Image (cartoon, rainbow, N blue to C red; front, top):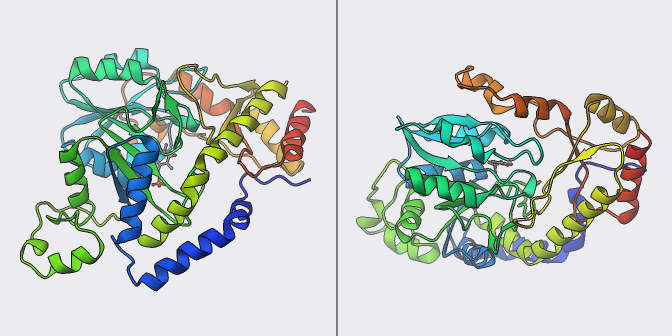
Length: 376
Ligand SMILES: *Cc1c(COP(=O)(O)O)cnc(C)c1O
């Protein structure tokens, strides 16, 4: 039995009719940028999360960059985030002109160690970006307390955690902005790049609309309305340099077709995770905190003989990956500039292995992975 780490063909096969119809309808509409499909998806996604406003953008990386810009964070500012994340979290901070300041992680859950955030705060600190890594919320209560005390903005990196909760709230709705990615591997994936920012603040929302569309005033005029505005003076007036970072109509239509299934998919992810947790014997599992529901973007185990285990599984046709083998403080782009020690994340990065977990996996496949690992 061969078990791929991811298998996107299965999801398309299950939704082929709906996806094809969404794509065809978009092509027939003749409208490809900032039209009705983007508007519709933005409203649906905001409603799903329980946020007031949503702005579709070109990627999860851009969602973080635009959030920072909209909150006025840039050159000379420091932004705190975790040493264990996908590189784009840190790249986005640097792209916005700010300096990333990294915090070590908790060894049980791999999430930012909230007890070590305050020692990294300086007069230049402007924001915290907690990352809901592997689909599990960071401790937002602790982070909100620290942010309130030091007057910091919070941007949640929700790229791996669409639908996860902290307490009663979905992640992304707790900080000032929530940044999402629709990269195809994510829990809600497009068929190309895409991202979104959600916020409850009207003025941040309006800034985001303008920033994603070359800084254009009236950037919030979508679809047919845009044609009318373009012909007026106001439509060609720009309030900032802005970016070109728009979710496109095709991806928005595809995402609207998929969104109704996200709850079911996340529930299946949790079910598979439960099964792994109950039956895996020879490897350590990460802790699921009881303050929320994780959505298992990734199922990560720890093993002191990690490389051997990965090689053994590869020989036995079970796909695995490592998220991530190089902590952020070790990235060449950061030039070894980070102060402090990162003993937990460095050890963690040498022991972790991500197992196949996606909603379309069959019970037999999950059992096969467990059997292979327990025989290691
Ligand atoms: C995927 C990811 C991003 C970046 O999203 P893109 O859409 O690929 O730009 C940012 N942060 C985390 C934690 C991610 O997993």
